[in-house]
Length: 295
Image (tube, rainbow, N blue to C red):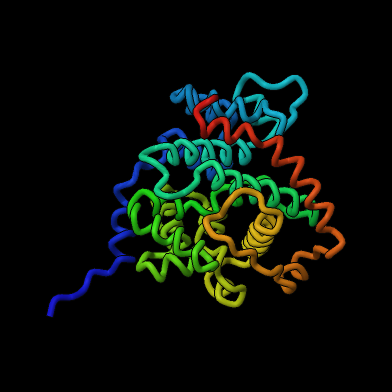
């Protein structure tokens, strides 16, 4: 009897055929792990891809960061925002570019990125609100948490289109619809792609674990990353509640009270967070211009 093909394994194998991140992003990532690296070294690497560097600097000079007088070099950008933020922007720009290749596979790409930007902005706001120790990592974690949806839209286009439609028709989470359509779930696919692209552990954790229950992820995710995951999950929930963009399904999850307690966020804080999110999402629209190729 022939063994039936495994759609999960099949899709994960195809992930390996997707384009990789630009060499510039990978080389900068390796420098970040070197405590002796300098802004000049990062600038020298980024000069190899002037288009990518130009887009990063346009984002740095946007209303989102509001740097007085602006900056014209990567070194100056690092001085204002730090190594990590520049690297996160470099990854974000690279993935935005990736999403423009080969069509969107059933996703309303602008609405998808508006939701992702909302989660990025909300993650950063929540992190600052609670005094998170590495706020600069939260924007990219929120922005890229649904990376697996983009990958599925490219490697299993029609089945992913069916899953999106199924989720909307049935009023269920896209994660459940993916399973019912015989697809691997986007968190698993996203994790595989993040590993292939050698993303830092913070991003792998957010991409691969944002749908897992706390007790489950505690078995595999290092304790220092649990707070980051809680923040991204709460940010995703708030964006769904406030209808910021489209995550691919109509479900609005309930706010996890235990998660709220772990973060120390109070119910009375939610309206304030909503107001800040609305203002910052507006300021982040330059990322959508980047997607449209207007930068």
